[in-house]
Amino acid sequence: MTHILVTNDDGVESPALLALAQALRELGTVTVFAPNRNWSAAGHNKTMHKPLRVWSVNLTDGSEGLTTDGAPSDCVALAALGLVETPVDLVVSGINTHPNLGVDVTYSGTVAAAMEAAIHGWPGVAVSLDDGEPRYWQSAAAAAIVVARQVLSHGLPANTLLNVNVPNRPFAELKGYRATRLGHRVYRDVLIERNDPRGTPYYWIGGDPPTGIEESGTDLAALTDGYVSITPLHMDMTQHRFLDTIRGWFSK
Ligand SMILES: [Mn+2]
Image (tube, rainbow, N blue to C red):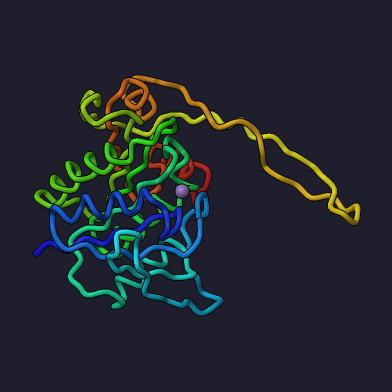
């Protein structure tokens, strides 16, 4: 029986997590293990300086899950280290409530959970839905099934994960699936300074949501064109083309 671990970074109460878990039950047994709070943009964590608590929870459809005060990547690590019944055939993280495009993947707790899966030798898939109203969770859940089926039948190479972004529209209106590379995200962050009640300044990183450059072949372009974007990511972040250059800097 196929066993799928489902987690997210928006917290165990996210309706998008439930939609994903319910959809993936079509493929096998699903274990939900997700953080008890929102860890969006918390990146890849390993909690080392405090204990991690784990509780049983009931999702809103009555099914059982696990939650923790740790990060999304902690959920996967705890599972891999024996907290859930193994083997786990696939880890699916999401559905994130915003897209994870371009360099977003380095901030994303959703993607970090799939990275943690790759570290433990498990195939990992991160799934995010584009912004917009109303929310088409079912489209992302249905796309997740399509991607999960392929990963379960073909596997993934070592240290590799898939980053999936789904347009926010009815499933019938998705144009198809595109294999993509990471595009170029444009952040519009601004520094906001305010004063607390005692007159001491504090800061927010605020501003408008990011945009991006919709270059052909990228995740950003696929999403804008109405396609489900699937980007293979590798845990080896070495800049191979630059290796020879820095070898020249340090000749001895
Ligand atoms: Mn999130």
